[in-house]
Length: 350
Ligand SMILES: *Cc1c(COP(=O)(O)O)cnc(C)c1O
Image (cartoon, rainbow, N blue to C red; front, side, top):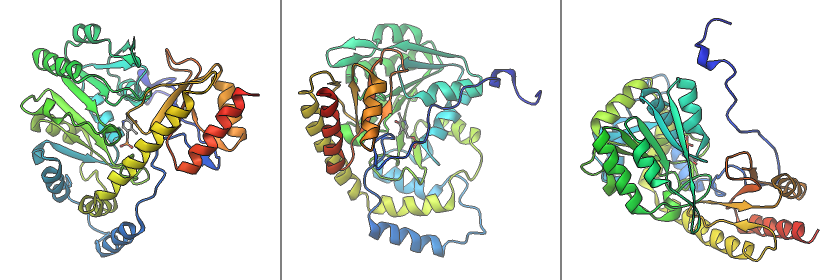
């Protein structure tokens, strides 16, 4: 095959394999579907839309609403079917992608498929498990785009605000772009948007896939300086946000209250499961500010296999550097977490 660029030869597939199980705790999804009344209203609006017509080129009406709601200038907002697509566009535009390791695998994957130079610096050991290699990052950041999930995936850690301020300053100094991926912000209650006020070298990624319970709908957005947003818009195809996704988001943005209830449930269950797991003889949970817990076990394959035999699907994380023995469990319904805990403690006494 001589159709494609050489760097795409032998590219590894994105690390996800579908497995079926009654208790699905493997993809950091919300355990709750969108409230029925909102679904019904979204369907009603969908029926009224002209399906033969293209949607707005850059989702103007939605951006306007979002701008008012999040307090960010409309020209700096880009809506897309999933923040993963925004990551791909940013990686395609980037001179270089700088990452930490372990991290959200899509940053490396996006750099790889777009043929963008890529470097990752390993996280360090910190008081609560994982810490930013701040000094190394500050000197490695010479331009390009630095992706940083905060709260962090796949560890669940929340990085100190001072570190992010230092990276934001560094981004300005070298003319790079710090992209703070806030996919889990509703579960930590943090808002870092001040970092980006008056600093065009900071951008934020947000998603409707987690606390807003819309993983299946595919929607996320970028908050950035208008010149950054402009580049990302041009890298993406025009009319990229489908009319049906737009109609659903419109209803969600008019009724955002349910997401706070989702986040409150997740935070409470997360703290309960964390506290219980602290009493496990061999498993060690890491502090988390997300909707999942990273758990170090003596043997990830055994832990995963036993949980699955009990109908509970989690995600193995032991192939990531520094995460040997680790599994990741999404916070689900209370009954699901009870089933998880029961199975986890069975391993201990097997
Ligand atoms: C889940 C997640 C996202 C969400 O991506 P979408 O394409 O919006 O579903 C983005 N970043 C991180 C780090 C995530 O864990």
